[in-house]
Amino acid sequence: MKFFRAITGPTGIGKTSVAFELLESHADYKILNCDAFQFYREIPILSNQEATEKEILFRGHRSLTEPWTSGDFSKETRGFLEQPVLWVGTGLYIGAALYGLDEEKIKGTPFQGEPRCDYRMLVLDMPREELYFRLDARVEQMIALGAEKEAEQVFLKLQKNELSPNLISLKAIGLRHLLEYFQGLHSRDRAIELWKRDSRRLAKRQWTWLRKFCSASDKCWWLNVKDFGREFSKVSEFLEF
Image (cartoon, rainbow, N blue to C red; front, side, top):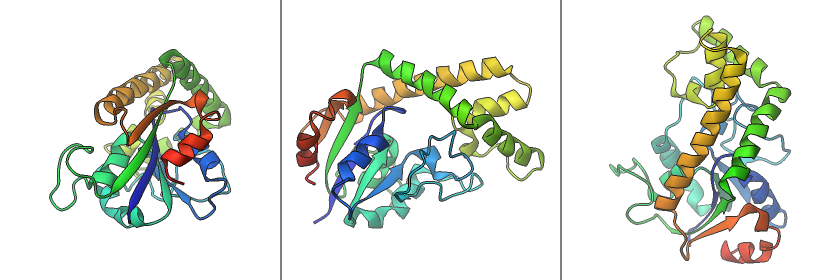
């Protein structure tokens, strides 16, 4: 019987770290990445692809020249519904996989209609101001790790016409702002300020989306990420591990 297990929540809240903890005693399971910009191999720092020896499916497996829509994701990951994976990432892509967005002439927003299979979803949460502080700190950390050099390499490809400026994959938060800096549209400080601001705005939009389509129910458990350690056993039971 198909059973869909997922972890979602706003950007920067720690979804992958929670997933790794849950799977420590489940070696047969793998994480399947559902974060839109972690699909791309050229921006591991800017898309927060934390270094790990463990395999994460669909992370860094495509080039920026090969944009992947939620509809594409829905089609190409369908076979994984029957495999031992934990889906981790944004609600949009998780919903696309679970509800078959843009497949078999199905259009519209995920989490409407009937899902392809039974599911359980852990939605990570925390006080808004705390997450905003973490997001600002993450930007500084990405800069320290070499995000500017990473974006500069993309900028050089644009200058050589190796990349189209219209690619949706270039809209990634952070990458977009640093490219604008290299193009002379902003000072470095202003680009970083806008990067932080737009990270916070993204988190706010994601919260709104999740509350609308993944409200608390017997299938969706909203959990403050700080309570995860205390609730570990209950989370495992909820996800039926």
